[in-house]
Length: 104
Image 1 (cartoon, one colour):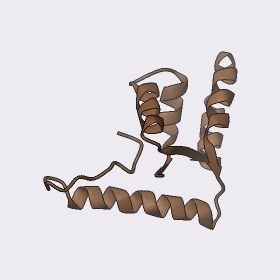
Image 2 (cartoon, rainbow, N blue to C red):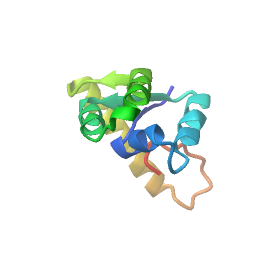
Image 3 (cartoon, helix red, strand yellow):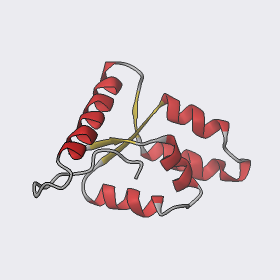
Protein backbone atom coordinates (compact mmCIF):
# COMPACT_ATOMS: atom_id res chain seq x y z
CA UNK A 1 0.00 0.00 0.00
CA UNK A 2 1.36 3.40 -0.98
CA UNK A 3 1.31 6.24 1.53
CA UNK A 4 0.75 9.81 0.41
CA UNK A 5 1.83 12.61 2.75
CA UNK A 6 -0.53 15.38 1.66
CA UNK A 7 0.54 18.94 1.03
CA UNK A 8 -1.31 21.50 3.16
CA UNK A 9 -2.78 23.15 0.06
CA UNK A 10 -4.43 19.85 -0.90
CA UNK A 11 -5.99 19.55 2.56
CA UNK A 12 -7.20 23.16 2.50
CA UNK A 13 -8.64 22.75 -1.00
CA UNK A 14 -10.45 19.58 0.09
CA UNK A 15 -11.93 21.37 3.11
CA UNK A 16 -13.16 24.15 0.83
CA UNK A 17 -14.23 21.76 -1.97
CA UNK A 18 -11.97 23.42 -4.55
CA UNK A 19 -9.91 22.36 -7.54
CA UNK A 20 -11.29 18.80 -7.62
CA UNK A 21 -9.23 17.81 -4.57
CA UNK A 22 -12.02 15.73 -2.98
CA UNK A 23 -12.31 13.71 -6.18
CA UNK A 24 -8.52 13.27 -6.26
CA UNK A 25 -8.46 12.06 -2.66
CA UNK A 26 -11.37 9.68 -3.27
CA UNK A 27 -9.52 8.25 -6.29
CA UNK A 28 -6.34 7.75 -4.27
CA UNK A 29 -8.30 5.99 -1.51
CA UNK A 30 -10.01 3.76 -4.10
CA UNK A 31 -6.55 2.81 -5.41
CA UNK A 32 -5.56 1.74 -1.90
CA UNK A 33 -3.41 4.74 -1.04
CA UNK A 34 -3.12 5.65 2.64
CA UNK A 35 -3.54 9.42 3.03
CA UNK A 36 -1.42 11.05 5.72
CA UNK A 37 -0.65 14.40 7.29
CA UNK A 38 1.91 15.75 9.74
CA UNK A 39 2.11 18.38 12.46
CA UNK A 40 3.05 21.06 9.93
CA UNK A 41 -0.15 20.38 7.98
CA UNK A 42 -2.26 20.55 11.11
CA UNK A 43 -0.65 23.85 12.18
CA UNK A 44 -1.06 25.45 8.75
CA UNK A 45 -4.67 24.28 8.38
CA UNK A 46 -5.67 25.49 11.85
CA UNK A 47 -3.97 28.86 11.34
CA UNK A 48 -6.23 29.62 8.38
CA UNK A 49 -9.36 27.79 9.53
CA UNK A 50 -12.64 29.67 9.33
CA UNK A 51 -14.99 29.09 12.26
CA UNK A 52 -17.80 27.77 10.03
CA UNK A 53 -15.37 25.19 8.57
CA UNK A 54 -14.19 23.85 11.95
CA UNK A 55 -16.31 20.69 11.89
CA UNK A 56 -15.35 19.79 8.29
CA UNK A 57 -11.69 20.53 9.09
CA UNK A 58 -11.64 18.25 12.12
CA UNK A 59 -13.44 15.46 10.23
CA UNK A 60 -10.94 15.55 7.39
CA UNK A 61 -7.87 15.73 9.64
CA UNK A 62 -9.19 12.87 11.78
CA UNK A 63 -9.55 10.72 8.66
CA UNK A 64 -5.83 11.02 7.83
CA UNK A 65 -2.98 8.93 9.18
CA UNK A 66 -0.75 11.14 11.32
CA UNK A 67 3.04 11.13 11.05
CA UNK A 68 5.11 12.85 13.71
CA UNK A 69 8.25 14.77 12.86
CA UNK A 70 10.39 11.77 13.81
CA UNK A 71 12.25 9.18 11.76
CA UNK A 72 9.02 7.49 10.55
CA UNK A 73 7.72 10.80 9.17
CA UNK A 74 11.08 11.49 7.54
CA UNK A 75 11.03 8.01 5.97
CA UNK A 76 7.62 8.65 4.38
CA UNK A 77 8.87 11.98 3.02
CA UNK A 78 12.04 10.34 1.67
CA UNK A 79 10.02 7.68 -0.16
CA UNK A 80 7.63 10.30 -1.52
CA UNK A 81 10.52 12.35 -2.90
CA UNK A 82 12.15 9.22 -4.37
CA UNK A 83 8.89 8.41 -6.14
CA UNK A 84 8.73 11.92 -7.59
CA UNK A 85 12.33 11.68 -8.82
CA UNK A 86 11.60 8.28 -10.35
CA UNK A 87 8.62 9.73 -12.21
CA UNK A 88 10.76 12.49 -13.66
CA UNK A 89 13.44 10.06 -14.79
CA UNK A 90 10.85 7.83 -16.52
CA UNK A 91 8.93 10.66 -18.18
CA UNK A 92 8.22 9.72 -21.76
CA UNK A 93 9.13 6.11 -21.08
CA UNK A 94 6.74 3.27 -21.85
CA UNK A 95 7.37 1.89 -18.37
CA UNK A 96 4.29 2.34 -16.17
CA UNK A 97 4.67 4.23 -12.91
CA UNK A 98 2.47 5.48 -10.09
CA UNK A 99 2.26 9.02 -8.82
CA UNK A 100 3.81 9.35 -5.40
CA UNK A 101 3.11 13.00 -4.63
CA UNK A 102 -0.26 14.49 -3.87
CA UNK A 103 -0.09 18.06 -5.06
CA UNK A 104 -0.87 17.85 -8.78
